[in-house]
Structure formats: C-alpha cells, structure tokens
Image (cartoon, rainbow, N blue to C red; front, side, top):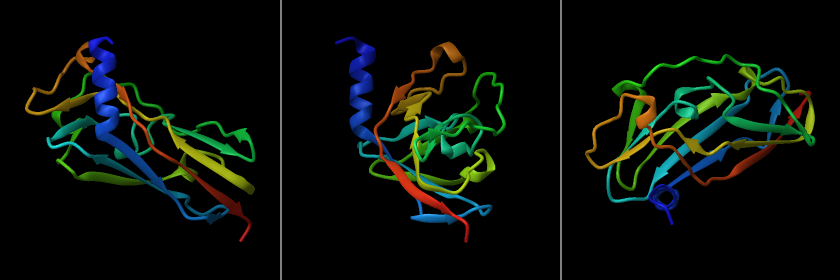
Length: 157
C-alpha cells in the first residue's frame, strides 16, 4: 500500500459526511439539504471548504438524479487560485461542522417521484495536527470520504 492510499484509508475512517433532507419539497420552493462533516479522530482536522457544501454551492459537488435522470448543475463555477487560511475550517476532535444548501438555486428541479442526492465525497485538502496549511495547489492532499445519500419527492403543492 502506498503512503497516499494508506493516508486516504486512514482519513476515510476518521471523517464521514451525513446528508439530511425532508421527505418532500414543493416545486418552486427552496430544497434545503443539510451537510454534516464529522471528525471521529482525537485530533483537530482542518478541511479546505472548496467543493464542499461548507462553502455553499459553487460547483458540481452533488450528483442529483430525479426519476432516474441526472439533473445538470446550472449554478456558478468559480476559478480559483491558491487557498488562504480563511478557506479552511477546523473540525475539532469528536466534533462536526455543518452547512445547509438550497439545491433549487443551482439545479432545475421538476416534479418527480424520487429525487436522489449524493455528495461527491471529495475533500480537496486535509491537514491534521499542527501541520502548516499549504498555500500552493500542488501541495494539497485530497481524499474521498464516505457518507450517505438522501431521497425525496418534488410535489406540486
């Protein structure tokens, strides 16, 4: 096992995300999805919020499928330079951070019987302990983390 894959395997057992949603939403109203990122380790873990719900919807971070058809992302895309300290969030030992996003602000959701939402599961940089936060893109260390998907309906009223 390489150093990168063993590191990814370690963090995938220490970090997990959880999505939650209502069972149904009304067409044309906000579709709020809650994202919780949990740290099961005994140390602080700093996460680059880019491409996660912790920064809002600023890219294609979800796979949204309604009645078996994938819905394209229609929100804004952001070109990025190098991250700063403000782009990271600390997740305390045995703690969590959370955010809510409105899917309807970036996806054209029509009436459907089953809408499934999955977070892509990638954290684009993660730092544990007291290591300095990288400033250059080529120093970033990404990992994929496990989590759940949510299912709901979009109804006319």
